[in-house]
Amino acid sequence: MPKHRAPAPPGDQIPDTQAPPPPLPLNSRHSSSSQSLRSNTSSTSEMGHNSFDRRQDPKRLPYFFSNFTSQEEVCQFLCHHSKKKPGFFLLRPSFSNRSSFSVSVVVPDKTVRHTNIKTDLFEGSKRYFLVPEVKFPSVQHLVSYYGENEVKNLQKVNNVRFLYPLKSRRESRTESFEDSGSSTSGNSHYQSTSDVANMSLENPPALPTRPRDLPRLSSQNSLGLSPSPSTASIGSPGEVFQNGSFHGSSLSIESGRSGGRDIRVGAQNGSVSSIDLRPPAMLPIVHLTKDGNPYYSSPRNVDEDITDRLKEVLRQSEVCDCGIPRDKADLPLGWTVHRSKDPSSFGKIFFQSNKGVTSWRLPQEVESKLNYDQHQNLKELRNERIVPVPMVHPVLSNTRHAVAGVLVMAILERITLEFVAQNIVDDRE
Image 1 (tube, rainbow, N blue to C red):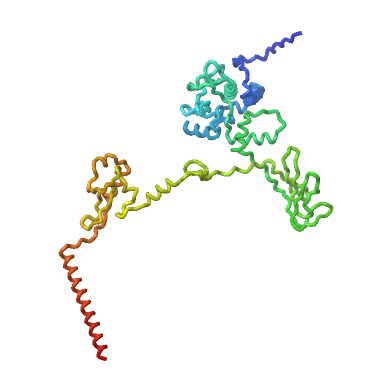
Image 2 (tube, one colour):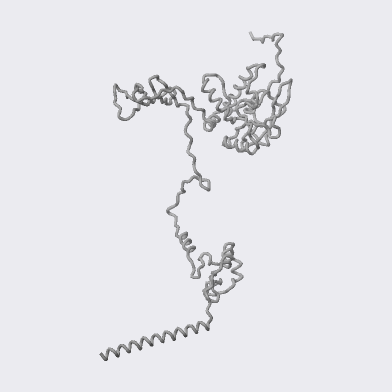
C-alpha cells in the first residue's frame, strides 16, 4: 500500500519558504566539487531553524578574503594562485559597498571577472541572488547552485561557473587539524582535488607538537630496538653485534601500514616520534636571465660557416692611417671620410672617392644616401677636437736649415783638419 505522510501536529507549523529551482543534470567534469559542496550545505540545513551554523555567515566561509584594496590586486592574487584555470573563484567585500559581497572568478578566456551578490528580505530572512529569478537562503547555496549551472550574461562571457574555491590560509590550517583529528567522520569539506593539491603546496599543514618529556639519551643505556624482517637498525661505528642486535644508540626505520616510513628513536620507556606529517622540501628557485629564460646556455650549430662574421669583426676593428675606424669611414657610392695630416689643415675631415677624387664637401648624391648611423658618425667626427701640429713659418724654417748646414760643415771641416794633423805627426815620428 502506498505510504501517506502523517499530518503535522497542531503546534508545529511547516515554514513557508520558497523552494529553490530543481537542479539540472550533473556534469561529469564538475560533479566531485559540486557534490562536496552539496553535502556540506545539506549537513548545514539539517541543524534546524533554531541553531546557527557559522558557515552561514559569508565572512566565515573558507573562500572569503577581506584584505583586498583594489580589483587589480584581486586579479593578480587570483591569477597567481589559480594558474589562470577557469572556475577558480573567491568571495570578498564589494569595493562600492563594503556591506555587500562580490564574487571574483576566472572565466574561460583566462581573465578575472567580478559579479555582485544582491540581497533582499523575505519574511524576516535575508536572501542572496545574482538575478531576481533565482534566490537562495545563503551564499553557500548560491555558490553551490552556480557550480552546476552557468552564470548567465556575466560581462558577455559564457560558460562561467563557480567550480574551485580558493581557500584562505586560516581556513586551510583549521581544516587540516580537523581532518587529522577526525579522519573517520562523515563530514565532507568543500574542496576539489585540484584545490587540495594547490593548497597542499602553498599552505602545508602544521607540524605535530613536540612532546616535552623526552628522555635524555645516555651512552650507557641501550636504546636499540629488536630487529625484525621489516626493520633495519643503524648503529654508531665500532659497536659489537650481540644476539643479532646493536648495543648503544641506534635508529630504527620501520615501514608503516599505509606504505610510508615510520622513523622511531627508541628509549627505555619506548617513546616514539613520527615525521609522517612533515611537508616536503620546497623546490629550488630557478634564476632567470634578462630575457626570461633560465641560465642554461643555448646550443650553437658547429657546422655553420662564420667566415663572413669574422671578416665583419675584423673590418670593424680596422683603423685607417688617419685614425678613423674603417666602419665609420665607409660611405655610400664608394666614398670614404678621412682626416687631413697636412700641417696647414691638420685634423680637418675630407672625402675621397674610390677613383681618387678628394673634396672638402661631400657630394649631394652621396649625402642623400646616408643612413642615420652615418649621419651620426659624421657629426661626431666634425665635433671632435684634434690638437694641431705646431706650424713653422717657411722663412724661419729655411733659416734654421741653413744654420744647421753651416754648423755641420764646420764640424766636418774641424774633424778633417784634426785627422790630417794627426797623420802628419805620425809620419814625422
